[in-house]
Length: 417
Image (tube, rainbow, N blue to C red):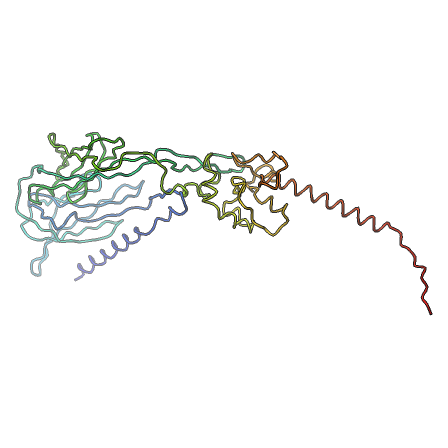
């Protein structure tokens, strides 16, 4: 009873762990911010427990803890069998095959029947499952076949670099993908001409060239190979098998699988579907040349944000009207001269009154007299606002002085009695 409760609690721990890891990645918030998957990935299980294990074979286990900088911890494996009221536990040897794959091999061959395999890992939890042991088999690399499928995906072929103000100067910042190119990836399920107790004792991998670093996977997993970045009439690959008991690799020198390009579209280069996300201001404060229009469109909400200038800096809208001089400036509740200077970027530069002129924006010092037809850089607007204020103050002071110095005229009209 206590053993059952312990295993049930372990399964609950594993379930909670996996559920927690399935949540949205908190590091991927914000447009064009790379999704950084540095949350440890956990996987603890007996591979395909429904497939039989021969008496002269091994039980295949996956134990994955992707936690960079920390050496992997060995899972604890217990194999037991209950007959009536008696439970017997069997000893065995645990060894790593390759990557996350481990095997448990009994010290003495187990008798035919069903056994409970319990796994414990300090970083993952506890789980248990029932496996079936069958008679001995002849272990040899199985003959296999496959009907691969080709699919088209894309990969980045060109990048653009945005700019940001570091307090002193403009510096190259986050890059985004501006062009993508087509490629082909091939996937394949393997079929075997022998019983499962044989082919399940091997791992398999597909490769274009033997030097490829494609991983070995269990017989119930999908093989993938590629990508093929050059279009061809067909895409071919070979297969290797690894004995899980010894990690010995077996080749199939006369076996090659191919899938035709067929009706797939021809390879081409094109813009990515979410290009506007790449120029969003939170990761792209100033766009590269040629992307100003797209940047202005993607960040058009800055027009409304400028209605409350105190919110501009926190929303990364400082450079909006410098990059987008033709954008309609909002009424910020000040004079036209004051609102005209709303586009100045508060980047903490050496001369804050000079504003911020983005690359490829109109020259703030180029005053051609047509100020009413376009929105110029903030430095010109601020300069005009200052000069106009000084003239107004001088005119008012002169008028006040004139009124004070003017002599009062006596009235000669006498009150009639």
